[in-house]
Length: 224
Image 1 (cartoon, rainbow, N blue to C red):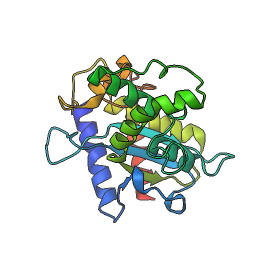
Image 2 (cartoon, helix red, strand yellow):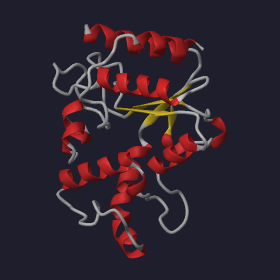
Image 3 (spheres, rainbow, N blue to C red):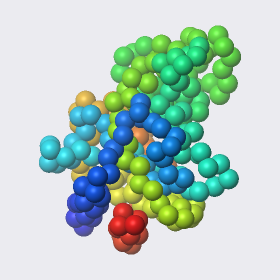
Image 4 (cartoon, one colour):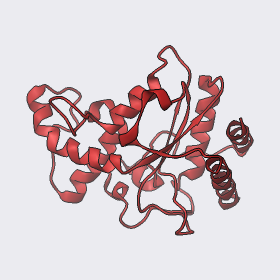
């Protein structure tokens, strides 16, 4: 059943992308090209489905229409990292859980640790010390692509339902692995067991069961 639902999801997304809707690299973000709210689906190089010609989703996010109309853009550029200023080419993992996860994975993989990475605050000296690792994190993220799906009237409850069920369907946590991560996936080294066990750069929702009804809602979103 889950395999069939995954195939349905990916088929809907393929149809959606055929309508000239393109994924964008995080390095190519533009404020004017982003909707006020919607879903973001992430892909990264080398991560395939059972069919090696097709990529698997590695992260899901959603952004409701709230008081901050630039919330999606603001968070995506925090993931991307800084492109100018004192920390050019780096970023701030304290403002991006995705950067945080990738940073721990890089440290564990390379056995080269930054002892301040888990600290909640950082002064200029700490930021300078962390900059080399932040720069590598940025280089990893710059290779990711994101499909941004606008949602009309994206209220928080609807988007959270869709996001949680997307994650629950895609997650391999405690289940037979379908579309598992590649042996070389960086997430295998992440300090967070939920990332390692789910095969996603997500933690919230990876242990939940999905509600099949969300596929109908997802279909309606993609058709609008």
